[in-house]
Image (cartoon, rainbow over all chains, first blue to last red; front, side, top):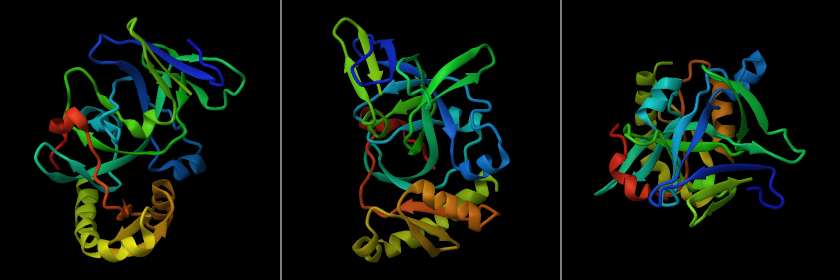
Length: 165
Length: 85
């Protein structure tokens, strides 16, 4: 499904309870140095399972993602825990989506090579300061409103969902 | 810089930031502060700008950035999953 005035759309299926889509996480904490050295920003990028969650204000990464990518925290932030406000750390990154590409403005799309194949991805052009959550059985990334507000999210009663930019 | 070293710097700066926050809110709310060794180094309009300034100025990576705000992030139903630092 492609919505008017959007160049990129992520399609998926939800089960009536959750909607999960593959994403890549790109470390940008040293972006300027990477530009100077011409080091490929997408080196080592692999897909993770992201749970779409409009109830989360911030995108969160599991311990596994942080460990896999060797992310270093950049500073603290406050998060609501179950019973109290807690101080956690945040990481600087961007979220990239795997999906269909349409239209002519493909500047934001890149090709990445994972262990198995080459994918086209769309890098959401918003710098995200996201926190850390414990490893979860069903997802690796909690995709919060800081990312979701940058596009158009549609949950369909047929069991489809789409997220377009 | 190791993760442990970075965490130590973040914790040190976070304690000082908490003391400074009431004063910072008046003139810098919504901006990002760059801190090193418990001292304010500068103010920036975005996290990425602050991070880049820190990378350029401190090659050892010993600094932290923090948004000047009283807002708290919510995780909704997954609040239980918040990692314990």
